[in-house]
Length: 307
Length: 307
Image (cartoon, rainbow over all chains, first blue to last red; front, side, top):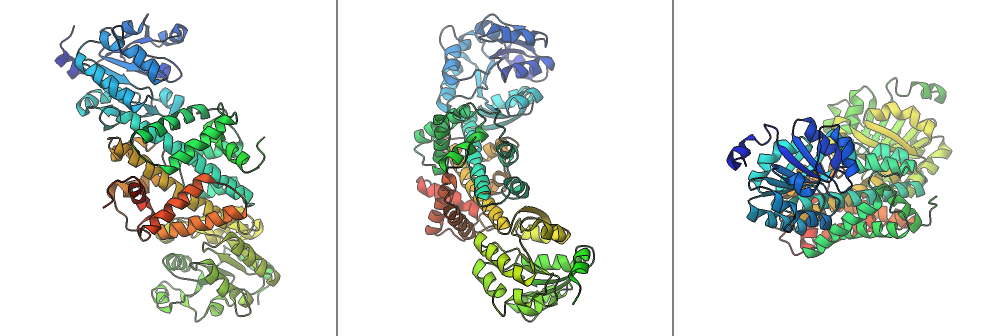
């Protein structure tokens, strides 16, 4: 085993041994990027055949999560949900028990704030650093290495791993463990509410007899401008609802946000309303469409034609 | 009197005679820009001393609205509100009666949709073209000639006056008369709702123990990005609430939007909620602060310190 103090110094400068857990739509291109810049990446995925194409990119396929974590400087987790994540990380046969002191666990999945705090507490007695670092930017951001990465954890641990995270996108330290997840919730809440708002604005001008496409054009570049007006506004006008971000995942996120808002005894009425609209949308069977299809829910609500 | 067909051909190419009604914060720099590019601008303002500085820019001070409109190719109106606007435009001594056939009335004030439609109908029998062309971008946009200009009216009338409007900013034709006002309402609705949404997101992360300034930074460039997150988000973090756009004017606009939404028998819940929050804010005495101070209302609502 290497001396941890020596280890610290070479982080981000020399190649690292990286355990990568979860090589799905997001994880696979991220693992490939890390291998591409010269790190030794040992990846594990529940469905092993997803590892095969990665081996061409220089990623080593691990037989188990523990094998991926073995002797790793950093273990990155990109699994789909909180409970799965805990199951693989915690306990006697979990990844944390398999990691060596002085290494660092970076959980990039979107999980509840308290789950992240619990993982940080579980890692600490083993001498393992912890960062929660959920991302925004989708598959494209993962492929291009342009993800927005919202990072919670100790500032010194963040600084040590900043060059590594910069390989994957734009990392920002936002506070102690759990803060990355909190920032991700804020992100998803803003996206949900802005989609709902843009949809309402487009319906207002349509019903009033103006041209919604021209109105969107006129508003871009002004105070009403947003990435949602640009990207999702276009999808609404073109009725092009192949996800992108499926409405059911958007609703999962607004539900997680509402739970966190309640836990903090907050009353945030815009977000409550946005969440309720996505709930109605799923109830009416549109959960597999892109989240911009929320405009269909507002059409239904107002007796306007949908299909 | 000139032949109207000859008149049409030289619009936008040669200098025009422009009547300019209302030289307040927005109107004054707009009138100055028009004079600056060589048009003959005859301006009127209710408070005549506001015309004095404009005379240095080559603007001619008119004694009355009728004098400003006399023999004008185009009359531009930039008054503060709908009723004042109707009072000066309509009736036997109004501006429309003083304008010559073949000329065009361009109302750039923010007024109700139906008021704009009524003005278009009043102008038509006199052979006068009509455009409603409200703007977004504030005093700075007026000075720099970068206003977003949302234009309703006949397409041919718009095309004829596009070069003139391009002197003031970025004109977009959005539909028949009244559509410019509809687009402006959509703009204001989006700004109001986005301010409320960004405020809620910043309070969530603050209460949860993350750093709101860092979270804003992390979210910029992602799907949650917007001009409001940038401009108004910064004001919220710095508690810098000198307007900018006063909350009372924002509320006037969301109230006008709500009236239009009701007239069209629409139910748009996000916008209803945004309007209600600005109403609460005014009730608690914050109407003269910048609209980004809505975060104070959400603090009050959640028992968080305000001052």
